[in-house]
Image 1 (cartoon, rainbow, N blue to C red):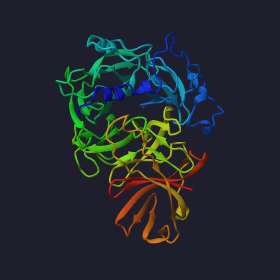
Image 2: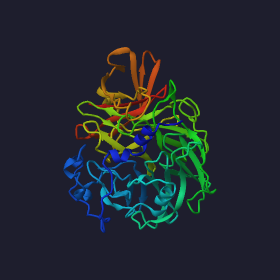
Image 3: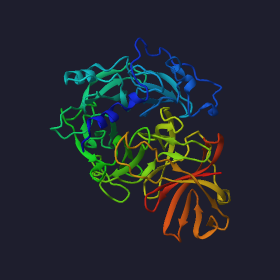
Length: 491
């Protein structure tokens, strides 16, 4: 797949559109500000203009988070993210935050004081000027070492690099180890854009890196487990995923891979970002028995095809009484006490340049597909849910999708998936129609439509109602028999 120069600029300087840039003379924090013992979850807002100026960076907490990656260390979860901020410039270096509960976040510091020298030198020596912004980090722990993969790009078409730094703790100091994979401004060679890294470690101890944005899709290459650098010097890997086309025009961007191995499913799950990051950004997932693929979608298709693949488990959405969220992709997936979570950016539709950290629980369908909670995680207690509690009105969102080929210039509409109201009656009907019925075998609720021609099987749980600032309500999430995600929230 190829892009015009203008399309490339839209893809590669997307962070700059959100207000990133260099802030000279600003050093990282020496100490972490103390946690606020009076923290109130209701203090987390969709927008944060009052603390947007760089002067207030210690208060950014869950704000100005784009392309998160999360790792656990001791009692803290650490979140690393792209150099981006609302309405202000920030120093290059990768922002770091930490949290004990995944709800209250403290801003810690930056991983670097400036652009990593080895990554910047690669771009300079290739005739480019590196952006003053690091993108899409990925962090993992290997034995007693933390490895941080970073993305650095330039205004020259597809001139980018993924580098590696290591440290003894997530708070650093970080030491550069070298360039992992690179791409050049050379269209005589088929290649993808060398940004957006993610790594999986197999049960056998192999390390595999996945990366890519636009151009030729998502690639995988094997790393040296001992060093975190390529097992074979100069290896670019092979393509394992690409996008579909409409009338010869690519349906949108493909980037931001995230890979996990789920031991209980004995499969590798590849999460991928589709479309333009400020509007239609959404999450697709595929799975494989091996780290090299093939990765198959819900219908058993190899996602290394010229098609758009399902399921889409997260997409721009709008519950009633709220402006909605868009740009909800480029996710991190991590585990906490046997529970998987997804972290990602969310842009409030009232102003798409704000970037909030969203974290959601992941549930696994009986067929082994991940689905995410329709509401963000807030550590709500989980208690048994009786069938009688399900009767009444629900807001339901079906994550449909409208193909709009192109990038920023074409995908100006977020395509919000908007909630409608359904009623579950005590007699087992939906909306009072005998053709639409529901049944419940905790924790799974089945919604059968049109005399069973279409069925949603969804997981029911308790979660916070963020739109209405209610501490707890019932929610559901699942897939239909056609692989379409469905969400619900009890009114």
